[in-house]
Image (cartoon, rainbow, N blue to C red; front, top):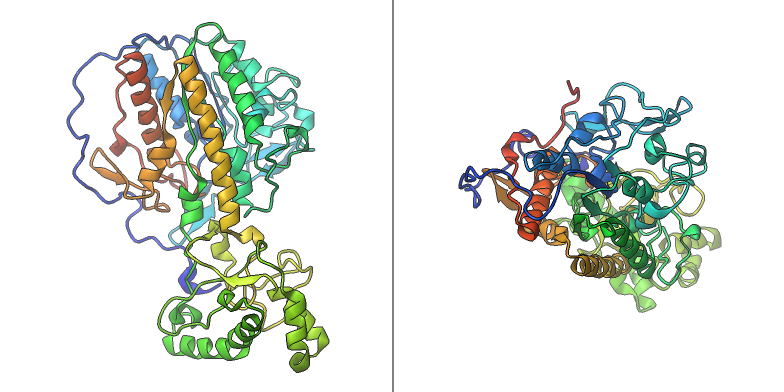
Length: 521
């Protein structure tokens, strides 16, 4: 791996850039009240965000700091009661099924990058814990999973038919998340679901299937996009059930995944001469010249002959160059390239080049390079991840430089558009349900857009979506940091206050760190 592409922190992990607080006026000493809502029995439904997932794992401290649990503490001051959360067994994270690890432990920042904490998981899925639980956030849950019987079946976990997190605390093997919520007769609920209906597709680099038009979720894969009509039906039924006995609640829409650090951190054009020379400019300049002569120039000439010369440009020794990627939406020119290279390379080698570069191009600012791809750039492709079933030989053995990054490494514009269309459709359904049932509404899409385009100022801090240093997100680049969860809880409080005339107080973001330490006491 190229040294310059290693994880870097530019500021201390304990603080972020400060600014004058545009909400810095001290809150008036007004007693917390519920307004027209009742927080006597609060139940929360959702996915990993509701559960408190952070740093790539679920663990006790993270659960305690979820927006749900933070919000519940605010509710207590306004007549609410303590809530029960299905806490993990430790602060290491990870899961065991029959003693075998099935989920990784949490990450921490070791000074150069994210690393796994010491220790092994102790939370056993097959040991069901007793509820009922108010926080029904289930990591990995999609909208339709909340109404799926058997989603909490312990025996269904090994086959993927059930969710290991829900299996720990479901009231039975056949129950549903919504059934366990309604059985508690809530007076108030929160519902933030739908992110995973597109997230799996996004984090897979678009390897999944866009199931738009398919209402049969039983055939969906974990990386597929949920059909918007199916989502609308499920969401409407969830809200109808939750409000049937007069309960009030708060719902939230969905941000674009493209605003998450997971998709914004790795640049599309990191290949400067210095980087290509592993810190040595002269070596890098020589490398650029060699790559142009041996690969980029012949490839561009051949593609130009077929009207596709814009796919590849020569590398520059003075500015940063884009990564080489595969774009499966492009016409496949493998046969044409094979024919063009056969006279000089021979049929076997020409066929190999045609196969590798038939849909290759250089990345643009419209592409989103996934966070884990950072460790892949310049690494040697293997038979598993090369896309052609073999480990390519030198010189075509450097991902992103002499060998195209594959579908799983990058989101291309057509895939980004599919995600956006689905997200927009889900948000229409969420907004309509909130309006129809008179529910408080949190515009997390707008909040996330603000975080990714300047930040939000509160309590003397500017919180942004910048990876780690922005303060809003954890080391997995998707889930919030402790401060990020507090920011979300405040957004929910604001929406509830505005809708129901309650006077919930805001959390002081300065009291919440932006990373968890290696060892949590």
